[in-house]
Image (cartoon, rainbow, N blue to C red; front, side):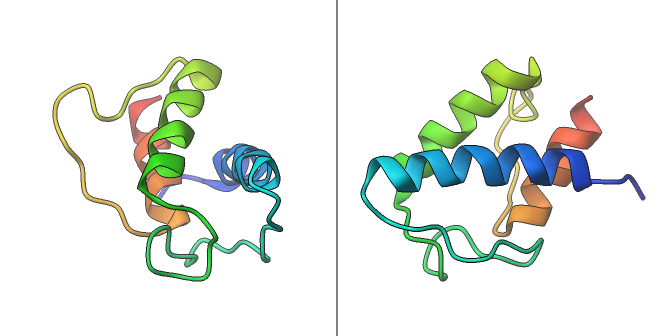
Amino acid sequence: MTDTQPMLAVIAEELARIVADKGETLPPLTPNSVFLGGELPIDSLDLATLLVVLEQRTGQDPFRAGLRQFTTVGELAALYDMAA
C-alpha cells in the first residue's frame, strides 16, 4: 500500500481554494470524505476543475487510460499515487 498523505495534502489544498472561490468553507477532510453527495460543498464542475489542477500540479493523469472509479478523497489520492 502506498502512502497517500502527500497527495491528500495537495488535494486538500486545491479543494480549499475551489471551495473558498465559491465563498464556502471546506469541512475537515479525511481519506473517507465523499466528493459528490457527501459533506464537501462541491459539484461535478468543481470536481472536474480539481482533476485538471491536480494534473497540472503533479504532471500525472491517472485517467489517461480511461475512466477510473473513485468516490472518496483517499481513493483519488491512491489513483494519483499509482500513476506516479
